Length: 129
Image (cartoon, rainbow, N blue to C red; front, side):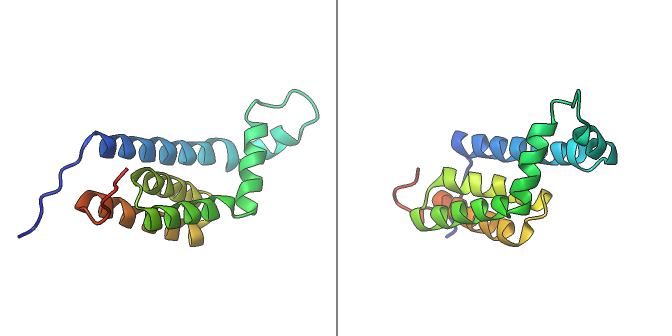
């Protein structure tokens, strides 16, 4: 007999966090990083737009593959420890990693986070948090 799994408030909150981080990463990527005019605007000596600082940080983290590795580490932690919120953040950062071209490790972290989240909901982990 299959066990019926129902989402609780923590699951809905997790989906909200994943959606906000994923959509935020996508919007920032396509509004502040990809347009060609942002390169010139941020390279200008004076009166730069306010998004140039966060843009530089995101590009540096992208170059260092930090989004992907963070998602992978969170996914492994979620899988080993069986914690819901580690899994949620592994999925969310994994989506941000894919948006920022760190897909190799980011998708692995997101997958491990999803497996852990499903494991928490199905009772695989007894101390589900």
